[in-house]
Image 1 (cartoon, rainbow over the protein chains, first blue to last red):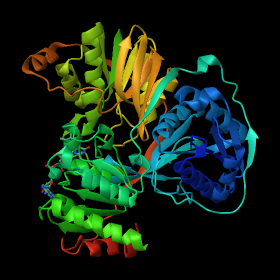
Image 2 (cartoon, each protein chain N blue to C red; image 1 turned 60 degrees about the vertical axis):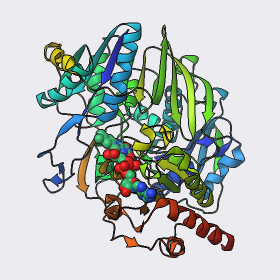
Image 3 (spheres, rainbow over the protein chains, first blue to last red; image 1 turned 45 degrees about the vertical axis):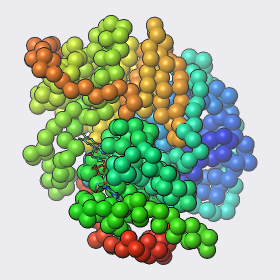
Length: 324
Length: 246
Ligand SMILES: Cc1cc2nc3c(=O)[nH]c(=O)nc-3n(C[C@H](O)[C@H](O)[C@H](O)COP(=O)(O)OP(=O)(O)OC[C@H]3O[C@@H](n4cnc5c(N)ncnc54)[C@H](O)[C@@H]3O)c2cc1C
């Protein structure tokens, strides 16, 4: 028996979301009285993988196969499933990243294991095994149970702290014996969307809406994001008219995020927008209209004109970072 | 080319969400059902665009009882040629995927489209499960797709960018914003939809993998603390000292 964690890597490093998933998996393994084993694919040094010991992982299975440097849901599924068999895993933990969520349902079928995506807390193991997640785009919370012996959980970004213990994991080379026919996609190229912090896993997010009047006014929003080391986001109204790129659109029909801080500037707070951001830990709203519905969903609010407030706030942030 | 689009019903986006039966069931009383937005706006319209360009047929498939038919008819009004309803209540992602796979396995579809995820359980699971059940390549979060013979070039969203890839039909793709422009059904479409074929097929016997044990309301936020626009330093202080987020 064991808990198997699929850890994602990027440019030879473990992603932050991988360490969150590893911490989650190790904590769960502790509660179940078993070991936490990780599986990694692609090019990455064993010394980097060994640091998963700090998150409580005892062993890492590593398939270094150049063909796995690009994501292919079918091939990756075979590797993770083979690792699960080898480790005798009864629970699989993945990150709720785009790739993690593409793999989890395939693994579910292959391993005959129920899956709950987007877990927001450690699974409850007292009595019935349940996993909690937000449903109805954040308008409700559901605790799921499994009819299967094996279970798969994907863990949301920023919902589980990274354990920082001592120790080093044993790293073992591993091969699932993939055949050419296991690969279905051929990656032609990858395009980075600028230097900014990717929104899906950002801890801090600065977001703006139609209140900014036009795309030319986003300079102050980007400045605030830079000062805070935050990602930028926007309302659908703004991405619909191409003031901002589609991948910044948050809400019920866009991305659902749960950063530690969400600052909304000139966004009214329509129910479909709130659905995507309401699980943020702290919400700040800046809006000229004191009746804007967003204030009801906020922790801190400033009623004022963004064009006056944001530059002042940026100055205050500069001062703060100069002293801290 | 044969295109299959998985469409699901979902509660209208403005629905107030409540639970009944001791918080074990979603309260469907007075809920207005719509077609799940990303199924309608991106998956269905993309399939229609490909058909208009390359010829072929667009079929929608839905797991649901008769009450879901208005949603299916909307898909026909937007332009699908025909529709299949698999006659069962949808209870979990695995059951839905297994029923669709059972229907689709002998139909020879070239591309199976789904929306990004439903806005009720936000599972992001049916497309992936379906592709494994049918042993097909799967691309999630497609934002662009061109088809040339049996080779498709698909752009998918990745964290912090986009990846362009090539894949041969048949495959499964989940669609999101960028893939297509939503269409509004016109009068002619709505009239035509009434007589387009809607086939009801019996549900195979399949397993269920997960169930909701109980629901909860989301955590309440306290009252908003208002800060004067002339005192933005106070906001910075609160974010640092009270919220501890900077
Ligand atoms: C099916 C469906 C799905 C949807 N999905 C989403 C979704 O996923 N995400 C999403 O965001 N929306 C979604 N919407 C749209 C949503 O209903 C709103 O229309 C949208 O969120 C509004 O965007 P906004 O707040 O930027 O614009 P508006 O509603 O126009 O609000 C602009 C705000 O800016 C304020 N303002 C104006 N000037 C200033 C100033 N100088 N300084 C400060 N504040 C100012 C105004 O008071 C107002 O509150 C969806 C709608 C539907 C029907």
